[in-house]
Amino acid sequence: MDLILRPGTADDAAECGRICYEAFAGIAEEHAFPPDFPSPDVGVAVIEGALTHPGFYSVVAELDGRIVGSNFLDERSTVVGVGPITVDPGVQNAGVGRRLMRDVMERADERGAPGIRLLQSGYHNRSFSLYMSLGFVHRATMACVQGPPIGREMPGYTVREATDADLGACNEVCRQVHGVDRGGEVADGLKQGTARVVERAGRVTGYATDLAFFAHAVGETTPDLQALIAAAPQFAGPGILVPTSDSVLLRWCLANGLKIVQLMSLMTIGLYNQPDGAYLPSILY
Image (cartoon, rainbow, N blue to C red):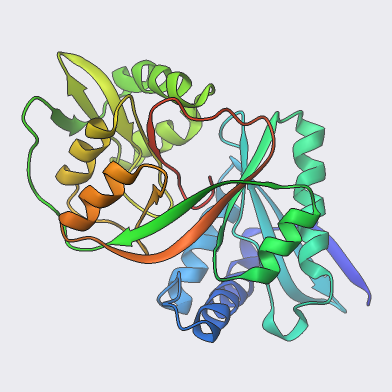
């Protein structure tokens, strides 16, 4: 197999996006789950966004001159996140995914990243086995939940749009909970106008870059996250990711009309601090 790995370019978006959609849709259909991407156009848009964002590293796999897969590394913050990684269904189980994973792991090592993280669908045993064999450790199980907006305020908590002046406070909350900040992602959320903060007793006690599959949220306490979730106008993509270990938050979501779509695994290599507070990871970590 004459497999070549090369950096991705914007011109790869259409083909890599098609493969991304078909790969995720195929494995989801096989296990009777809804696809992460509802259409090929959404797959292309996600891949194009990663290919053209300066904070993402990309690698494309070619077999005999034909694109057969791609992978990405989110380098916007100190700890890096993997994905989406996809391989053309026609050449799966032939080692392409392993090569794509080793490439981004080597990239993270070259950058001196203290830790690598990813999330994978709980029903996809092959990908779980691949990541485990590469040295990843299972850290937590996440419930992807989706449903109609809750649309209410919580007494004592104020949720508002975040501003550039909130970046320092958001980073401080993240460091308090995770030991590291995710300032690059927060900065993107500020630019896109999706970032929100929650205030309690006159200070920022939590934030969300958005309430969405590709966004994360952090709070000093579970009620801080409840306030952010309750105020969200929608839950973009397949849903938000709630740690099953936070049974209070998960039960609250279910009681407020949200339903579990699927379970996912958070896996890591390197630096990992047990969260000291409440959090929602993104699909990248």
